[in-house]
Length: 165
Image (cartoon, rainbow, N blue to C red; front, side, top):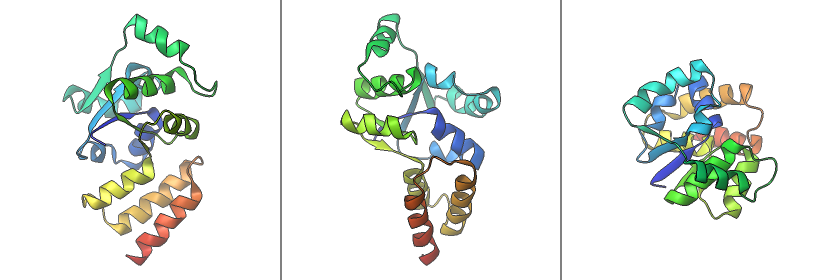
């Protein structure tokens, strides 16, 4: 994945874990949309500001005709305008998607878009040696304590692997 479109839940989880800066250490161009950014509360947006100002996080603004296309996109009703904006941008710039939102992930897969989530980010942070297994275990447990939408089986499998390493 050379370019990734990130949705709000990835930003929120990384901010809560105090790992937002690690996202911009990946060898991936990170984009999001105005619609996603508008979902965030002021405190979260403050954390993103330095990355937006330094152009490490590129925010895409759609034209009115693109917004109309997004609104008319054939997608499950469970996908919000923010979710649709992520898919639309990913398709148009040939990017992958970073999301933990299950309906969005499933829709991306049906659209033949590469989609990764927070567990993949943990793997990347370990591979880049930004964290070690001990920190990964601590933060995964922390993440599990506040994010009840995670694939628990996959998280527990990673915890088991990291304890063995």
